[in-house]
Image (cartoon, rainbow, N blue to C red; front, side, top):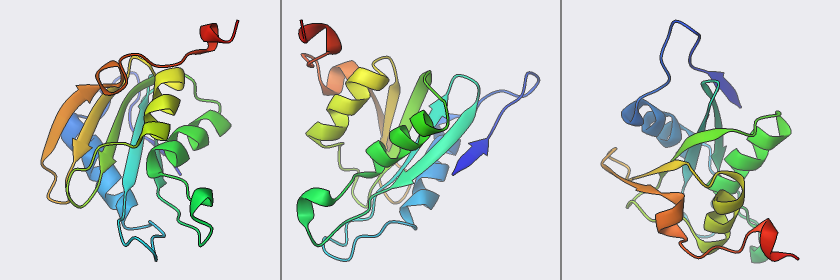
Length: 140
């Protein structure tokens, strides 16, 4: 889902607004096994917001996290310049290692907001979450 949030005369979303979008995306999660609903919202440089939610599968390795759903949906929509990502869980849980790796490659300069179900959040960065990431230049 693409939500356009700004124009040349209107600023991009605030952290609280981006978190509200992620919290709303949480409601769409398909989590019949863990019951751990996660929503994510990626803010792009042009002001677009692309959302994702976790989608579980009975074959557990086939599950995909909200962060990767949002980022891959953004890529599919032609977006490449990511400013921030908000991740919303029940208890403010941090992104998993796979999501951190995807964020490190596709949005290394993103601000990361990690929120709980009440909208309380902390701010960090991709580099802080995965300081010694494996990057394309390591594939020499």
